[in-house]
Each structure stands twice: as C-alpha cells, then as structure tokens.
Image 1 (cartoon, helix red, strand yellow):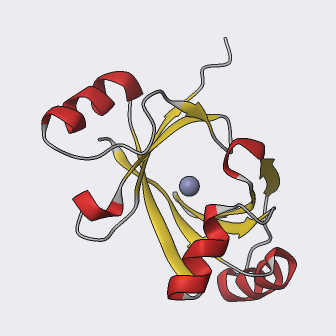
Image 2 (tube, helix red, strand yellow):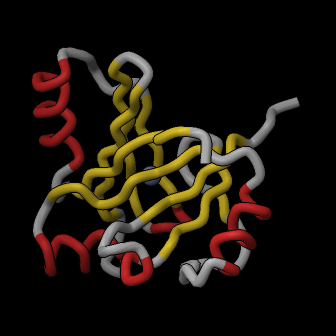
Length: 135
Ligand code: ZN
C-alpha cells in the first residue's frame, strides 16, 4: 500500500461537523459528495498532504447509523491508496483478511474502493482505494 489516503470520521450531522472541522483545521471542506452505493454523504478536508473525510448516513440502512449506535461518533476507517486494487484484494484475501466486497466498488472522490472487515484487522475498518484514471 502506498500511503494513508484519508481518515474517515463518522458523524451524526454533516453540516454541524463541517463547521466544527473547518474551525479545527482552519480550512473549509473542498468537496461534498453523496455515495449512493454506501448510503453515506461525505465531506472532504485537506490539511497539507493529508485528507479527512467526514461520513454521515444518508439513509436508514446506512452502515454509519449502526456504527454510531454501537460506538458513537469518531474515527470510522483508515483508507490506504493502492496502485492496483484487484491485486491488493487478492493478496489480502490470501493473507486471510476478510473483504467486505468481492469486487471493487465506486466510492467517493473518484475512487474504486474495497473495505476490509475490522474483525480481521484488530478492530480497524480498512478501506483500499485506487484513483480512477480519467484518461
Ligand atoms: Zn473513506
């Protein structure tokens, strides 16, 4: 894996948390995006080379609702940038990790994504993401 691409934070109220994180980081969110495949709405902040993604549920069935019910708001996942998501998924599966989806899916911020079940990674939800090339 190349680097941490972003850190995802589960929040109840996207607008309130956007305000809070703008104050905290001293920058405004540069992008808001609805991700229908995950039932979430997201908001992205950049601090230097790093990115923070606020994630709120956009519908009842959203996994974020369940997360917040069980654990409250807070760090939800760590996302790593990968060059080739399919070969990385294969590698992790062979290493015994449980992938939450069999095929990469379209995530926020022009990425193909796949999640690794937190049960197989010390309680940390891991997201793999590969930039979708625009050429
Ligand atoms: Zn993410």
